[in-house]
Image 1 (spheres, rainbow, N blue to C red):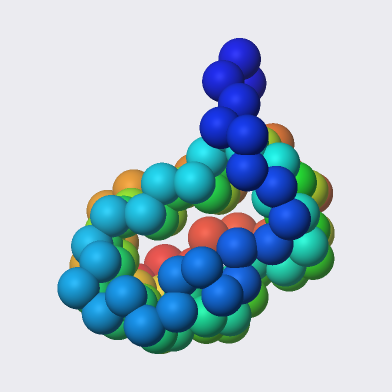
Image 2 (image 1 turned 45 degrees about the vertical axis):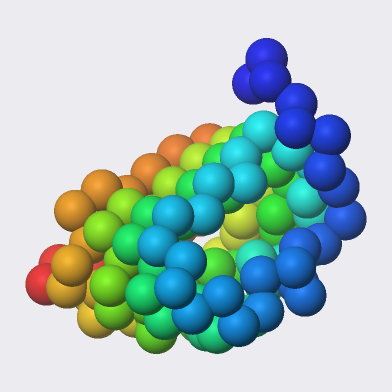
Length: 110
């Protein structure tokens, strides 16, 4: 990614209780560690883009609670493990990008 937003660390507490937030794009930064579990405090989120960072570990189960999510963009990180079955609970999801990670398995069908 040719862009760099200049943010680093883990955005864990930065997004707490943003109940009216519908669009969150934190791509092209240097965030690392796990995808924040505090996403569960953003229930109306429709678009989540965390691409081109250095997130690791498995996709956090909190994402499975974001039932309003229409776009999940997690490409170009270092996510590992299997593609989680809870993604099938995201019935509003229309767009998903998981490429350029170290994930295995198939995207669950609805």
